[in-house]
Length: 132
Picture (cartoon, rainbow, N blue to C red):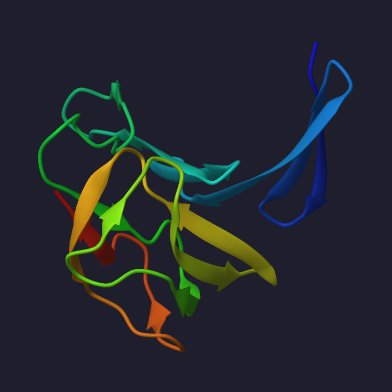
């Protein structure tokens, strides 16, 4: 059984089977963002049906965007357009709530565009990097 402890507003320590991970949660009850182990998950409630939709996971093979999960400052940009990336590569590093949030490639792809610059404050849903 997992134990969850709030360590700061929007930050939680999850302990299970002797392993610990810090999880960040932001947003509202209708539009929640979760950052865990370099992965970003989003859960939205649609007003029409009241059902939950899966997070913005990229399709395999095809074009997809990597968006800011919460208001944050762009600390580092580690890729350029045309650069091939592998699953798990860190593309952009954000800082929010005094914590660094690496934005990682969810799969093997090629960087199409970089839509942010270092030092820029970005808002949730802002497209940072487009991959194909």
